[in-house]
Image (cartoon, rainbow, N blue to C red; front, top):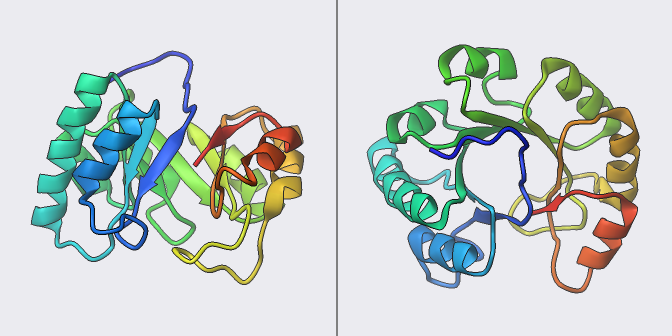
Length: 186
């Protein structure tokens, strides 16, 4: 497990079978790390716990060799089981406080937000980083409301926590996201 005093999320890649074009989570993670990603979040809501742990353990080995981070989406139990660097929680997942009680002090907790109100609420719960999005429409997690770069820019004025811009970001629109306020890209 990589422990850092200053959390450098940089390029943050989420694995998703819907976007992987037939490649495995492990292949996507290896390519992401080879391309300079600092973090890979393993997200797969279809795998049973045992298989998810096996995939996570393989990615944790890849992340360790790359001196990068593995974050597990939603599943604190899987993060604990494989010694992942942390967990990423959604609005309907385990609370940050509950996750903090079971994870080690070195493990990272991130949380997704979709509005300024959620950013402010998350800030008081003290995660290690806050994801704001979606920045743009995305087929992997359709939302009624697109937060957009302006919401993330406003979020920057309301928290000093590291921010991650998520959702629908590609090489064409990444400059607009980065121009709104410094952040990691997902």
